[in-house]
Image (cartoon, rainbow, N blue to C red; front, side, top):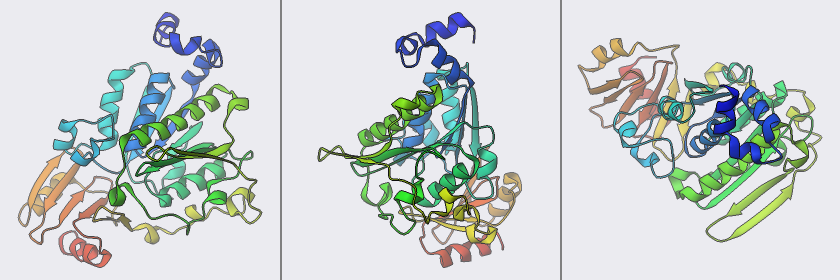
Length: 342
């Protein structure tokens, strides 16, 4: 982008003294990764793209559904009707907002096997996930490679956010142990859109502070809030726990699970089990196979098969299958074996 185009597009942002022309140049040179393109991720991506961050890479395993439209701001009814993967739909929309930056959309499930590749060349990671399993993978990989990440979570009318900087702050594990999650999700107790926007905006401003180098202004606390009941609380980030394996650099538990341990994932509250047991699917081949025994719909990104048993299979080219309509891993594995084979 030419200097005059930059000056015009980002003029109001550059008038803000903590950013200015120098900060705008730094933003253009930076790269961020957004993990999860649901409610938080779409707001985060919108802010990063409009602010002029040079490379915005985002990854999501899911596709757009009608229930997303209440709070996931980059998607529309056509995306839901066509079951477009969220990462693809987001890129299409964001490319119309800012053509002067680089967008990288990745349709994949974040795992110990791919997170380090996803972080390659990244200056800052942003948490748009909806589960702590993925957050711990992100936390451990970021601390292993010295990459800051900005945590955010929202459910019901509540939310929280903090920025974790390796070598300067405690990590997520120091604040929330793997056994301490509430178990509440948007799919079980709901969520209102305003809390999503607020939490993601808190995340975005901390990201911009870090990317332009204004470290003195960086918030060094965990902020929590309930916008319905008018509660707000800020807790100073504690020192790293002496027994934290990640902060001590001794090992990174979320990255050490073997491949078999990540084959089955329950998507909490959605009556969906995800199974990964293949390296890839040729959707054209599988359409031909499954059409004889199910009602099949396809697009370039996925295949849906409505099974006679009542459940649905959703196949992705990267080798993942969603078994929708059950929360029972045994039932999911039975259907997978019956129609896909183990």
